[in-house]
Amino acid sequence: QVQLVESGGGLVQTGGSLRLSCVASGFIFDNYVMSWYRQTPGKERELVASISTTGADTAYADSLKGRVTISRDNAKNTVLVQIDTLKPEDTAVYYCKARLRGGAQVYWGQGTQVTVSS
Image (cartoon, rainbow, N blue to C red):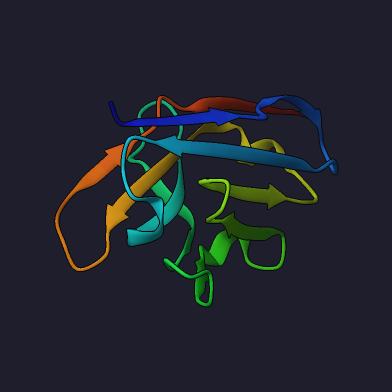
């Protein structure tokens, strides 16, 4: 059974930091490009950050560059994202996504709520 379980969300003050974790199971983690997305009500889900299967390559949303870091530990089937200097506009549900490298298979986590208070 495929699972992507996110954790680490919650209520954070403006200017604080947060680290979200996604633990994967049920598929070969090393073969999947991992990403974090976020979504607010009424808006489309947007990419936050992405990391290649080996971790050698990363990509970040322009709106978050300089404040976000994505990493993965293939031995632990885990992908992390840290967001610093949080702003109220970072408030969203954050989702973990796995996409098969060179293929079409995609899995999503259930999401974790991040709320940044002003």
